[in-house]
Image 1: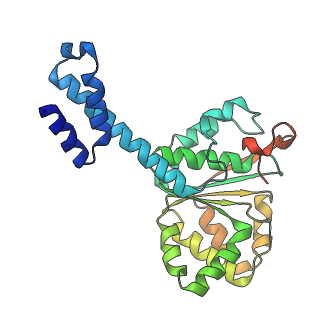
Image 2: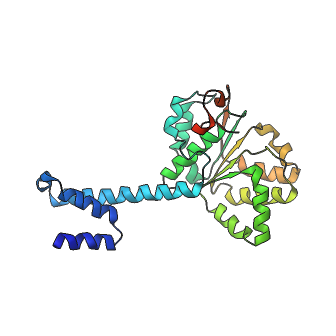
Image 3: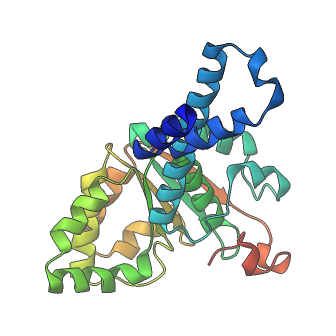
Length: 251
């Protein structure tokens, strides 16, 4: 009876994982050999890890990654594509998110840019950081809708406070003046404060021309280049070796 009360109290405190762990302990024949401190430590450890897993699941759901299954650990099973695995792992395990660095990933279509970007964002989520995936070609439409319905300013605040913003397919479609100005606001809010990952088929030396307006381009690229890491992917398109459903190729 007392144990049932304890289990109910744990659940009323929203400690469901700890309650399940306690029920599991009670079913183990050798549990009496463990001290109170050892049993308590195991219960607390299960609750902490359970919360971390649930938080990670929420962060990944909110991130809306193109390839949510992309993980850094899988990088060694694929072609190096012109990058060193050690460099990617060093970045992933480093402080680039907390330091607000930019990661610029370029290469031809199908080289795996989006996959690598999603793997970096996924790893950031596993470390407790928030992330969000956006495709730049669709950004103009999204911004027009938000300007029209009055949610633009609130959305800017959301982007400003997102730890990792992934801008996919940068430079693929032309921008109008409003989208260009709004993108500058987004980049400016995040400069040296929040991490930004950009993928592009367009080499970095051509970004200035793509942005179009010299003043805006100077301001945008100055902010992105303050603290950045570059990866240039090469080699044969991964789509020829793996179907898109496996999630390792990008546009």
